[in-house]
Image 1 (cartoon, rainbow, N blue to C red):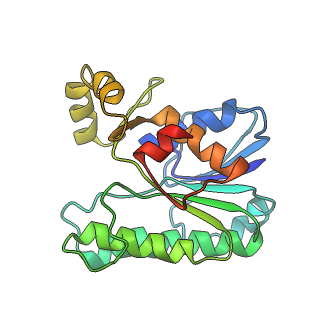
Image 2: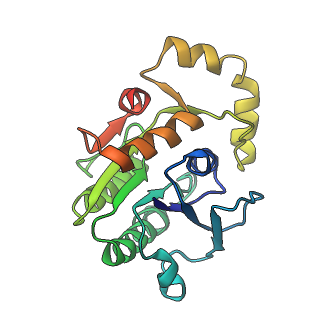
Length: 218
């Protein structure tokens, strides 16, 4: 398989990249990120793309993709709805439409979040925008799925690039393995998310919106 990975420099993206590079049936990973990673691997083709809405220059490298794993995202903290929509909805759909046009049979997996509002009418701004993004992706002419993880435990040496999250994970790290074992409906880890994405790319899933228990079951 040829995998297109968006957002490999983030915590989730790092875990997904690790699992893709370890998978025997993945031949190449084309990674698009706003900032470069430190990963070097024979299977990895990394492209730094400051603006995901401008992919015309690398379209040749995006052809022949079996699956696209979209792991990029920003926090809605202190952002206006217009700005958050531009970063979350507009950029995601720009990438998805470009990749689906080149690869109409691909599988597209979008990392959303627990609590996303599919009605698009709730009080939470970020949940509305994520819901609108999910709905638009699921309407595209391809096999599209939305992952809605809750708490994600970083494993395999992976750390968040956000200082606040690094601090929180450092404080919670002794408890997270216990929570993951005790509350599998609420907690997953970066390794499991990556492996679940690959499973969906290989054989699909019964649901198009997958919550934490669904992710852990794959």
